[in-house]
Length: 114
Image 1 (cartoon, helix red, strand yellow):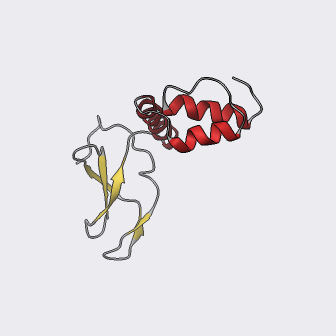
Image 2 (cartoon, rainbow, N blue to C red):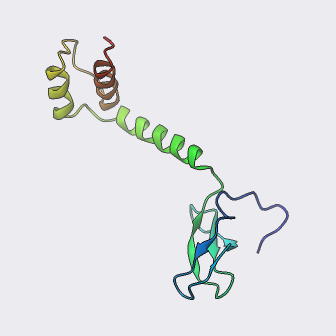
């Protein structure tokens, strides 16, 4: 299953408890499918434990944050965002996107004037 060309997998060395047999041990790596790089399998009974990624938690979080911001640029600001900006004293023209509204709210909350 694992070859010398297999990339390092984050958190694969952490012991996991098997729900089937109850053994707490370092899992064996199996092939992934779809968006998953690898699967963690129980060394004792071969049961599936969880999906594993080749990316670190910080990398996954950065990718998630970037995807969220890209999605927010395609949506108009929500009514709640516009109401909150008005309550914070923002008198600039309405923001063009949900991301811009969010950034203005953060700036106002931190005392910065955009």
